[in-house]
Image (cartoon, rainbow over all chains, first blue to last red; front, side, top):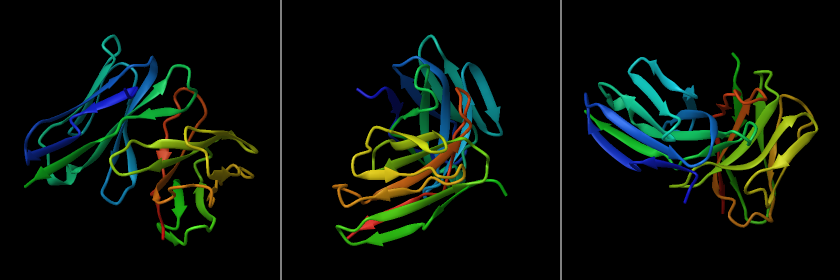
Amino acid sequence: KNEVEQSPQNLTAQEGEFITINCSYSVGISALHWLQQHPGGGIVSLFMLSSGKKKHGRLIATINIQEKHSSLHITASHPRDSAVYICAALGETSGSRLTFGEGTQLTVNP
Amino acid sequence: DGGITQSPKYLFRKEGQNVTLSCEQNLNHDAMYWYRQDPGQGLRLIYYSQIVNDFQKGDIAEGYSVSREKKESFPLTVTSAQKNPTAFYLCASSMVGLWGEQFFGPGTRLTVL
């Protein structure tokens, strides 16, 4: 069992739909990252959070420390949101090392 | 512009040859990392360095070597001992510490023929 698990692995949506990607972790963490990887391979950091909720444009990330669960929401999805979304946990005792989930492939159709 | 550069973007090598992947950052970050990504798998840590002239093995260091002679540079050598070197390699950097958000380079896709 991976320390960081994401669901679903693949997600197809129609433009405009509300999207949720889930991340569960089994280790104690000091922070959780949400990352976006585009088809070309480059990775962009979307959020880093340790509690509550963060919002940036149409993206919202939430975390529940007690339940060891985080979600990434995309409102009014658009084809340009098509990418792999990765959650990564910064463990309490791992220094700056991250543990990555396997990623969720999101495809938004026009 | 501040950022991380990796070169080349695509690299082809014959089996049995060593190859060195470049990673440079001008973000003044102390920590640098090398990851490997295979299709359908999460990123796996190869090596990381938190200070010049020091580095630690990650989860899959066998068949790889690194050096950290300058703060800005963290080259990765894929040696002939690496059994399955064909993969996508990503370099990242961060400030040291619990809140060191990692910034990623564009990656190098290595194909060994």
